[in-house]
Amino acid sequence: MSRLDELVSRLARGSGFTSIAQSSRDTKLLCLQRFVRMFAYGTSFLILVHFLTSLDISDERVGLFMTLTLLGDVVISFALTLVTDQLGRRRVLAAGCALMAMSGVTFSLSSSYWLLVSASVTGVISPSGNEVGPFKAIEESILAHLTEKDKRSDIFAWYMLFGTAGAALGTFLCGLLVEGLQGLENWTTTAAYRVVFVVYAVLGLIKLGLTIALSPIVELEAPEPEYEAVGMELEADVLLAGSSDEDEATPVPTSRSQAKGTAASSSLLDRVRSMLPHVSPLSRSILYRLILLFALDSFASGMASPSWLTYFFTAVHSLKPSLLGTLFLTTNVLATLSNLAALPLARRLGPLKTMTFTHLPSAILLCLVPLPPTTASGTWLAVVLLCLRACTSSMDQAPRQAFLSAAVLPAERTVVLGIVNVAKTLAQAGGLGSAGVLAGARLWVVVLSGAGIMKACYDLLMLWMFLGLKERDDVETSGRSTEARSLDVAQTEQGHK
Image 1 (tube, rainbow, N blue to C red):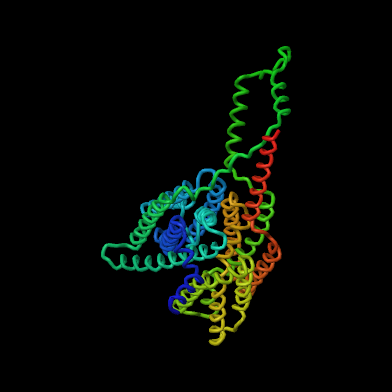
Image 2 (tube, rainbow, N blue to C red):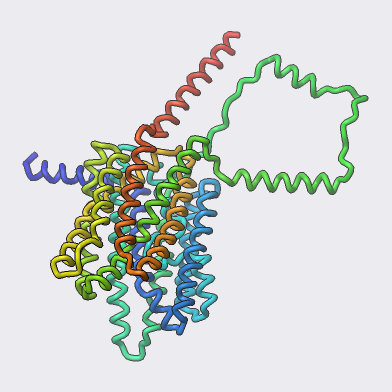
């Protein structure tokens, strides 16, 4: 092998390209689904507010639309992730794709405010370009199920990369499409926006086709019934207890209809309970800590969201839109590349230490962004600090998903990831609102430096709470092996007797 071939091979392994290239067909389909979905979110997010205002909908009602859409997404996503493994992962993903297509069709045809609200609340529309719906939690659970634990960071990094590329390409092409249609004769701005939603609906159908192409292996395996050896003495006692004397009257229900009603309600309650997932006590303890920590981080992310950072550089440093576009394009590219740069660290340090040590510098740099003065040199210093923050701000994403997948049992991943995502969404919404109040008072140091401090606390608390946590895959495997050996011994002894 030549030195060039050896260098290419090392780069392929270091960037995780070898892992994604050698992954299963279902893994590649899931990455492609994320690309298509984020492409669709990128197209609709860019023109959603402009579309609503073109229908003469007031700013207040647009704000209400965004709030209701967020709340609807939280409720529906939480409900679906609770029953995903019982109903079937492919079925729930397919239902989400159908809702996505339905929303696109409604927005392409209707001008009724409340009909649009209903389509966004019960369907799938992203008001911010970020993930909405149950897709992410289910897909990440499947990826962890399909991937060996030492390759999960690689796969999750490329999964994130596909999403980022899809969103960026969708936003770029949407702008070109709308601008091109507006330049044609007899085309109104609203009509151009409706074409984008037609594209959104078509992308939902394409994602549905990709979901149908998934194999049954993506489903959670049903647990095998546990074997319990019944002793001969216990069996005799049960048989004797069944043959009671005739003079012992069996109690009869006073009302047959009452008995049937009680049985029917009991049966319905049992069916509902069987649909809900079981979360072990240790996993519940882990989940409570995860909700607290991720809520803290997401609240800070809402305060330092791209929209507020854009407003900060516009209002404080008076950057022109063209410079802002270049700035955030640069930060997005750096954040995307940093995902791949984190993979060698994850292999050496492990997911938890990697996500903490790479995220902490970005939190410190975020604290420094609002401190430079509003002079020309101060503005460039703030820009440099933001770009440096982007170099490490996303390095924790793939290791974080690998850590979450290993922290809970496989049968609990979907519901735990779903609950965590819901908590993050709600906390981020609180951060966005709080930043608005503080920005109105021009307290930018409190907004951005406060967000950085909260993120630093999240990193340190994460390391403190979970440093000694063992991977649950190993625990479960060893537990099953012990149970299997005990069962073999019991059966052998029973045979000797």
